[in-house]
Image 1: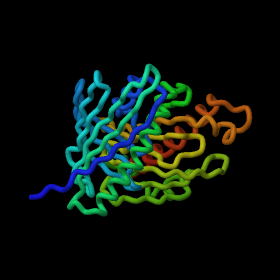
Image 2: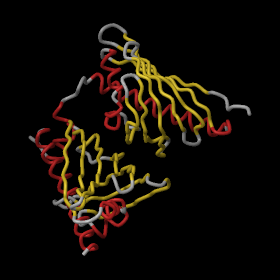
Image 3: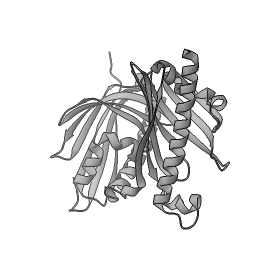
Image 4: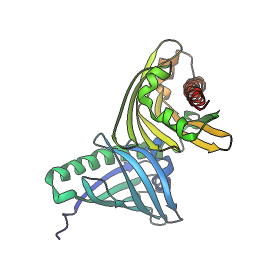
Length: 315
């Protein structure tokens, strides 16, 4: 049987940062959802010093694709090779390499290489894949440069926190309440509009209008990856003005006493929006407090409504 043709692509960018710092960002896939715009969620399947397998979900031409890749990290050579184990159509196979080349002590050239085959060697599929690679590579390289040139970035802009509520009922019922976001408008007072889509099982798109205590309404768009009865992870593709990044996770841990629901958030404050959103004289510290209160309040309200729903059904 004739194999589809192998196609190649290369993208590169110059970065005003030491090569080692750039490599560390490429190697740390756990941070990718908040560093790289296309990346929604990553989980380690296997993890070693130089070899790892990761499950990754990312947007491609407006669609969410999920796959598992094997990566080889060459720390001495400042490169990371990757190969998809099982690709998602229209991709038949894909691999490539991140290559970081020092250009002096404070400059680096980053080359992102791809090779791929399209299902059936269809020219339209080849064009679709190439467009997705071009878009994602450009976005990833630009984000990589920004992150590397900022160093570790101002710690005050990054905020992670979690809230929990205990439910006297099974994890499945609590999970179902959060999973069934299509009913949040009727179930949650702070939600005024919901559009939920699920073309691929357990991969949801969620557009939602949330009402703040002052009456203002904020529209967000998220991708949610659902792991039945255990957790739901998400990334907002459209964030409120005060945030440049928002990722989160709902977890459901069942024990002999019931279920512990936890809502965790990681956000990056958009400093340029602080005074526009909060008013003159407000600082990043004020923004952190505002975001912590607003997101925590809404998440806790959702969990408390889930608790009431589940416990009423188990009486």
